[in-house]
Image 1 (spheres, rainbow, N blue to C red):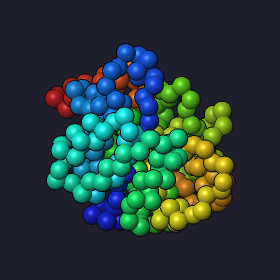
Image 2: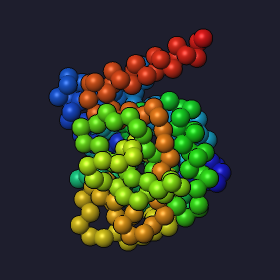
Image 3: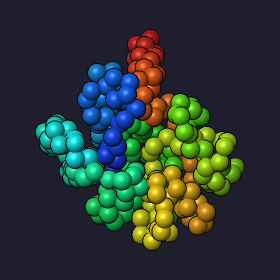
Image 4: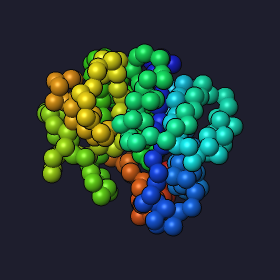
Length: 238
């Protein structure tokens, strides 16, 4: 799989209610880690991985963010959808439907990680079978409602959900053309339900581990990501 043929998608249409509750006044995509907005960090991760074609979905209260994004990344093949959706699954459906056929790399805007780790996931996921969907998972559990994943010895996902597992989802997915073409069972309300359904339907789903990725939903998550960034910078300076 060549990065030139890989379409990217970013889910950034959430309300960010927990961050607002913690005192943040900007839209969630513009919340900064180390002085860089979340949306900029994740787009830069795609660029670092060689992905140049992106579809981003923002909600209707984030039109200023959409304009900023178009100006900041004018050189990219960037499609920005502005639509308020009912759930992460609806946002996922919107961006996957808007992109050309093929494998698609999808990230939530709040999945903060260093670019090198993002690239490592893309490289590892590309080595999985072409008809497989690959989930990034992490042993770092810093979420109020983590989504656990249980895997076999070969990394194939056996179960999504439950009270425990081997790791938790990290908000980054390589979605196969096969999965994109499937007609979903009616009644699925959330992205986590869709992922569980893929596994239960017998689709080939694999997991790749990312050690340092933070789901940025609260002020403490911003602090954790910034501490991680500072530690990386300090290590690089030695």
